[in-house]
Length: 301
Image (cartoon, rainbow, N blue to C red):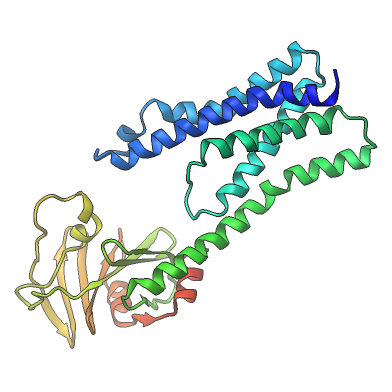
């Protein structure tokens, strides 16, 4: 059997399987986006376990096809083809800040090329050094993917922060580091989380409500901001008490929340579990503006 035939034996089941998995991934992504359940598990459905096991099933199908046609060593060829395909998929995903189903045709092309290369590297007579070099080259995308994905996320975050139109404020509390930052452009909310071990302080920056009139009306509660898209009833606007210039507090289910007015924006500083009140107050009184680039770097380690 010539090289092209050996490559085709692996490429055909690999391409068909990858295309089926890509189609299922797209269907599950649409279903999850449209799902309104309170629990994530209820939205995943039976397709999610299939997606998890799918790559192994496709690799097994390729191995069986190679073994049935006498192409060997079948296990190594199938495994290397699967890794090469995974590397191609990861490079495609590195251009997206979040996991995004690839087009079916693209998944098919990547699998066909990946499994064909796996067969070629394993079955063609090559000097050992050349074979090892080709294997390393096929595995390289697996190593560089985290770096590429991180840079893509930072670029996307920088653009989102710059376009949000709200003050980019972070707390300066000794011992706490900025663990995450997110810009919700649809609801116009900046969310920043500072952590110290298992403790955390959350900061939310929103537009100053039109009816903001403390102490009677002090804007959305933290729960209303976090669950805004899941709530059907009008959000509450609980009262507050003034503790300083443009600085108020109120007790919510999460604990004592600090509210700070910064121009046309309102900042809510919310405590996590077992966070000392002094740390939350320090966060509220040390809100510091940063650039989109600085926030993207600190919020996406």
